[in-house]
Image (cartoon, rainbow, N blue to C red; front, side):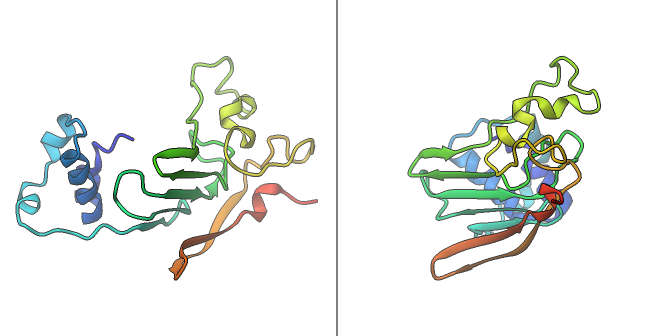
Length: 183
């Protein structure tokens, strides 16, 4: 994952956690690029002030949640995303998730489709491409329903109704009801 913009975003959003994540990546051998040089936080990075990195993170608005067991390499990492299916440059993928454990990627996001595919930007064509559809993502989809031709509705929204942690670990509850349309 390219985190080279984290210094800029950390400063713009006043989020010291993003700064610490990027510093950790650089200490662990990630390559630097021009963004690191332009936005490097000299005054805070050299202050001796360290921020404890959280193991769980909820992204309000896009309704996404990620968690990890630790910041060590090979730690368990999981994430789920809700949000709106008809976001610009988005996929029909509310409810998709990732899971990594012990250095093995068990479930992953295969990424976006090539925007240069034939008819990609036509009004309905892009959702027929595998990577843009619910089928091409780690999520539930409804097959063979005329009212939901892409497995999920384009206008649906997955709402994170609760996130937290308990003695067993972190959890997130996603209400994905609206992405499946009405019966």
